[in-house]
Image (cartoon, rainbow, N blue to C red; front, side, top):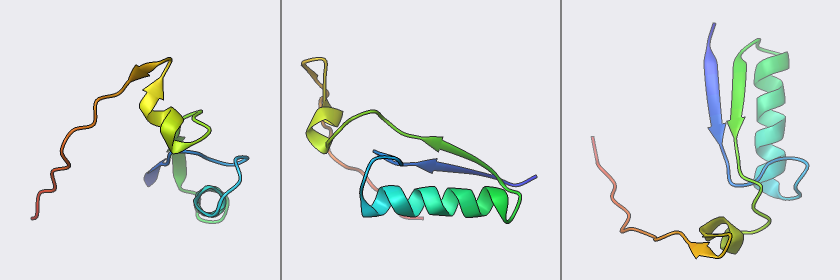
Length: 68
């Protein structure tokens, strides 16, 4: 069986284009194609909350991309 992992900051029922897109995509893959879908998300209400957990700032590191 094929498996898919979707990782997104927020997810349905949160409102937004990306949230709606990944919800629709996940439902399609699972229900129409029979693919096992997992979604990893947060409960952050906005991007600022994502980086400031319980008042403890998450240290942002320099982004590093590796080209293959």
